[in-house]
Amino acid sequence: MDINDLFLCPICKQIPPNERKQFLAQLDYKINRYKKGERLVSRGDTVDSLYVLLEGSVETELISGSETTLNVDTIKAPNPLAPAFLFAENNRFPVDIVALEDSQVVLIPKSSVLKQFATNEIFLQSYMAFHANRTNVLSERVKLLSIRTIKGKLAQYILSRTQNNHFVMGMNQTRLAEYFGVTRPSLARCLSEMIEEGAITLKRKEGEVLNPNKLKDSITH
Image 1 (cartoon, rainbow, N blue to C red):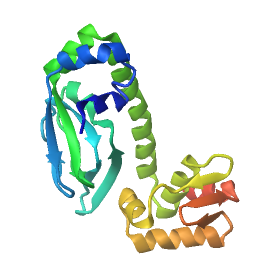
Image 2: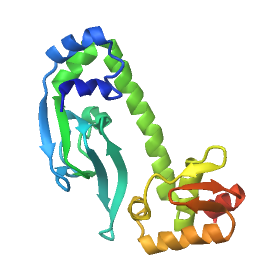
Image 3: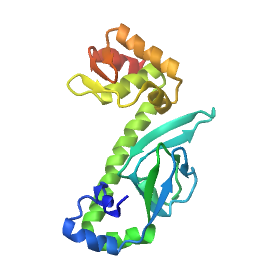
């Protein structure tokens, strides 16, 4: 991993090339490496540094009351991990973070981040924009989780990914079941029902919405 890959990350990519050398010179950081399946952080751990995933991918997990592991999100490099919680009053990770493959993370202490905020307006604006965008994504996630039925969750997920009646699932059925916090057979059954009812077509991970009203009815019933 090259530390210059930091400038591929959304919160740093807008920094002009002629300012990047100085940015790194003023930055305190360390690099942690994780093997596939290794836990980066546990829910409740204090967020005292900005975590930037520069290589690999991770998933955020939450254990429900029934001891079911719910996949909250999958994050691929290069991206920051829970940057908003660095400045929260209760600055603790709300989820477990586990490596899906061998990964590398840059840790930047809070004091160093604050120093960059004070001297680099572009970095500050990019950080705030990323947080705002992530808030929108997580709002959609909360909306998805609030839907009671598996079929409704699946319909909402498909509609949110549909453009010009075309959609790409983005995950295989096993991963999607984990994302919803349901069993794979239950998810597969609902998917088959949607196809049989003529609501969608699906081949591998790509499909077409044939009857959006049927999907919307699944969300509300």
